[in-house]
Image 1 (tube, rainbow, N blue to C red):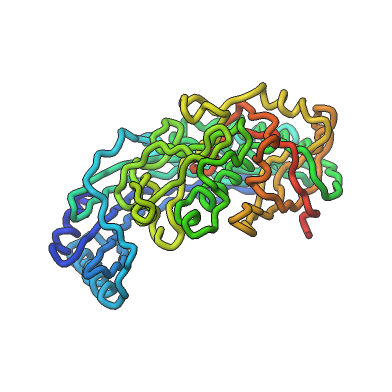
Image 2: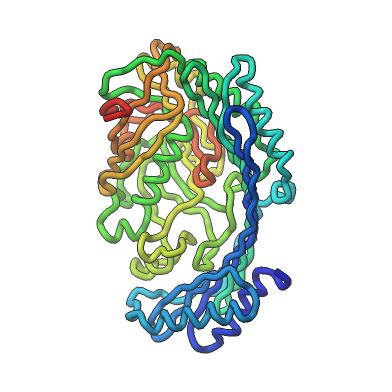
Length: 452
């Protein structure tokens, strides 16, 4: 690309000219992946991406088109396709117009070394992960991935923005005597990944999981580790604090009411140095910090331009592609102790994770959730399975591995008044979308074994 992402945006807008309102998003980058199985690297793949996405509105009729061509002919075809599609569509009564010119806060979740990382550098992280299981001859499988993205955005009302980001992840399992233990880390930069630490956690869980027992379904006190808490936050944020869901009557949220335990605050903040991604949304609105729950009280929703116009407010910078169907979506969620959302401090409360587990008389330590599906957005009832490490805790000590269980549980109910017993000081980035700690909860509803 010779003229950069913003240059391509400008060329598209020149072709559209006065025929329509238009916004253009150009994203380029690379994704590189090192896979391993049976403790051997078996695949290195890399792909370069280039995407030009055009949204235009003419006569109130909206259409979108996408291409990976940036030559003049390719861009002209893109524009003509979008214009023709718009002519065939009915008027969109909820079109809220283009984002006005506005500056974006300084956000640069980018690391050049990660952008340019080699297979050898990723292999070193994998090697450290696998070495953690080598004393017990554990077999390992998983991947180490690095990604980068540069985004340009421009619209016909004069908004012009650019941003860049990188991300690195190690995610794998180690197997011991038929038991799997998982370990993962995600960061803006590859150098921050500690493959040995991720592997040591996976190896410890695999050892503890050997000779796992069956446990009867029922309600158990639980300590949920960050991968589980991230899943909770993604459902709460996406189906609860989504302004479209709320306006449509499908959200559990009642703004201004104390709905969660007063120990908990939840917020979304792409500008935090611990987050990933760029500083503006799919509509070109700058992202900003948005409080969702403050000391248990639901205090806010996330908006795109459509829901903001409907509610008589302004966009919070949470539009996603195709969001007219689903609504705005928080992509940088933090959960922490009450007060953290205001102070900006790390989400920490109580003692170490070992001390949190030590407070459990009889319950379960849960490493990960898998195949979770929401049954009722209004009540936040979700069903899913445990995975890669479920352990019985007795008298404050992990005593036995437990075979995977199915659960059916209201995520909002699990965090309700009196349900949060402690927040551990082990917050970390999970799946690039949530920075969260382990939680000690009073009750979790396990409904059966993994097969039922």
